[in-house]
Image (cartoon, rainbow, N blue to C red):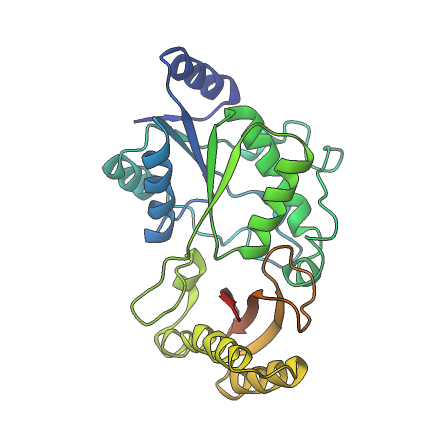
Length: 283
């Protein structure tokens, strides 16, 4: 497994793989890899012959006061995990490699509608940063398949819409959220939780399950359901950022005719922001 740091090196390596007739897979990450990331790599390995994993903490998607400087950077440990799972290439660029003239005058990719609300409302500019860096990575590597986790549900929707609208020749694949035994969605930010907070954190997923159960049982007073769930999270010491029911197909608002739904949440536990979601259907 090679680790390369420049765009030119990566393009040359991928070109050689293509000349050998290999299908190219890609898994974009910000590093600090856990079992959830490894599941994405395994999925890419199942569907392609040569898998590129990018590790880049993208400054464009962090807002003022967010954890850019403290975000964990663990390249050596990540390389070891990727070697063990069988990835072929790690692309670990610097910020100056990705944004050689800085970010202020850099072209940005904006995906309207689907990026609005939810995390888009709480983190202005976040999805513009995500769409911009992912479009760059996809253009650098040119994969046949790119795999993203469904824990970042809105992010996956944004990337799918971007790839579709820009006619990018890549199949965007989602992978179900990987969870700890107690149901907490795996995240690099879970490492910020202390022991007491870690014990409380699984309540977020349990609350989503309760919402789904109430809707599938026939309740249609959605605002009241959400309000009750928010109060439950608050009583446990969480600070809800958002909690909402949406149409799973396009993240539009639900109505009584919506059959495939997703409930999405973000909540602070201490200073740590947790996100999660749950897809479900009703007859």
